[in-house]
Length: 475
Image (cartoon, rainbow, N blue to C red; front, side, top):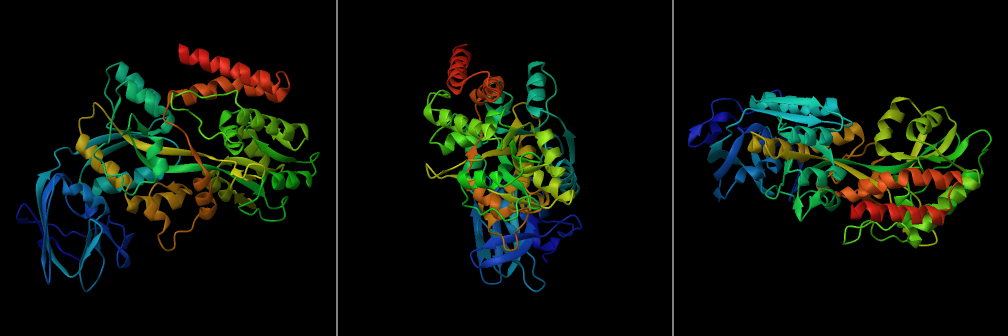
């Protein structure tokens, strides 16, 4: 392991030992294979920018210059080797390293506030606390329900904003229009999956760095559904499974059919190629939507689907009174903690169209507020949180899907029905970063209840939905 006298910052040797108890090894991919090591972002001082860097090996010296080489540090590594030192920098492996020199500007800020929400608060706080100890900075991590709404209120009141906020894609347009967050145009996006970037891109700019995502999936009770569900099963298969079950004793199928979030997957399966068109409009009264809603109502009319909201559905599934449910992958750790005998499957294929029932992919991300006092420190912390090292630790612990392609290929990564989640991600539809999506959800909420209760026909429901959408968009 390299010691501090082999690291030089602005021509002066660093005084402390590089290795400390706060560091944790991570798996690293290089052109020559897989290694274990430590991110340079964690073992070197925090820098606002690095404009010169030299790697010296036993055979040769390598000189690097650029506007900010520190942007490469989160995904550059010191390789753990008891006999020789190696460094991976800009995806290249440098063997037998004898020293590393760098010059730049040290981080000026030493404190920061970040608002967190959703699952994994404890794990995120642990990661942030570890990073703060390593670099001797003060990170105030605060759990805030609906952080995007609170940020808009604080901005409008001209109050003190946090530096970083955790958010979901549907909040982006409001936050951008109220000038609450800044874009991340200069942040490296190379390893982020395209769906993640799409979820937080507006006006051709990335406004938040995706951190993880959940997918809608099928859960089934293995005590009731005797055979495992194959990944390429169909809607016909789903109906056959449901008909074999005693609908007087249990609910064969259950999901929140009152929410458009569970209508959209079926809309896509019946041929809706885009949820929002290029003019920013959601069409409600089209043929794919009509077929999707008719299909869901037909399941209900056959007494094999019982629409219900999440809490009631989960309670029945836990009690063994619901056989097959549609929910989010976030429920996997919860059901596992209860010791339930369950399986997980991707959504089925539509045998008539050859298209999948496409699960919604719900990304969570980190954005930098526009009025932050520590923009560069905020950027470094987001780089750390979205690094391969943190993704490898956080996502398996909570059965989340990582937002980096390289994490999927790490040897030994196999957790929480990962293969099913990967299949779901490939078939998935991203929640768009536009207000019109929230408008669609709100407008359809009551209308879907009317349709499922028989108080409105499918055609009346969709015509009324389109009228509401048109009126809302005009206003």
